[in-house]
Length: 339
Image 1 (spheres, helix red, strand yellow):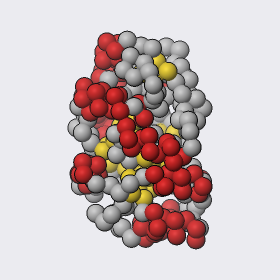
Image 2 (cartoon, one colour):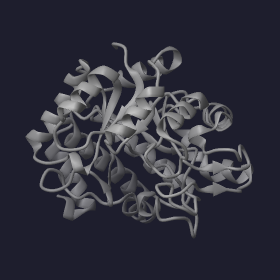
Image 3 (cartoon, rainbow, N blue to C red):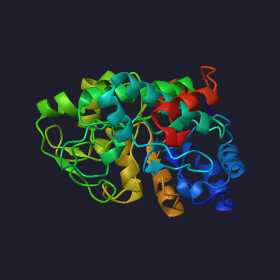
């Protein structure tokens, strides 16, 4: 892997501008992320992904997307079907655990078919947050359920379905966003939950799936661990909880730095995220001035962070040989509208 900075960046539109090409070439982000604003026709998506990689001179530069199903799905008809939200998979699981688990795997395997045709590397899935009653709808129907055991079972199946299709899963939002009572896109949630309750509820799916290659942090303050900052910028949360108690040693990516939960300017955010122990700083909205601020304080990937990045990318492309038509037909038995 040639030298790259510890950041994932978005872009403004459906093709790269000259300024973006020059900026990426100079600053060399490790990876990129796509949003709905970047999605047009199939050939355009492929061209955009290829141009991102060309800009940094790395044919293996990872490209990420949020393709969960439900309201968080960047590629939609006619390119990909509208898939059900995690809560719909969870409802099926409650009626029939075997059917729900199989449907979670099948849907993730279909995401992998949809994404791999554009050479998209990673899907920010599974959502392992476990909501509680009254929590913010920022997670809401994105969650598989409100009990750790079902979230774990379905999250594992989804991760395995993506990996079977050669697409990397990114579990989110570690160590748990489910009980937040505010939307971290708009403000910083604070939890006064006792650590014993977090261990018994929020941490459970992440700990069980600690072997997955990548995870995304939660912009949430866990006052029982560190009242001074969110998990994304807390060295204590990252070292003692994410790396320690949960035991995750994969590539740790911040949630989006353009969300309102994090205060300060963009250079300060980037510096704080890396100082806390995240491996990669994520910036999604494609605003050039903000990306320049992030780039000004990110460093070259090295040491353990580089090892984790290389380990994660080693999973790319390891497909199981499943036939897409058969997988779609089987999934249609559970969700006929997504035939």
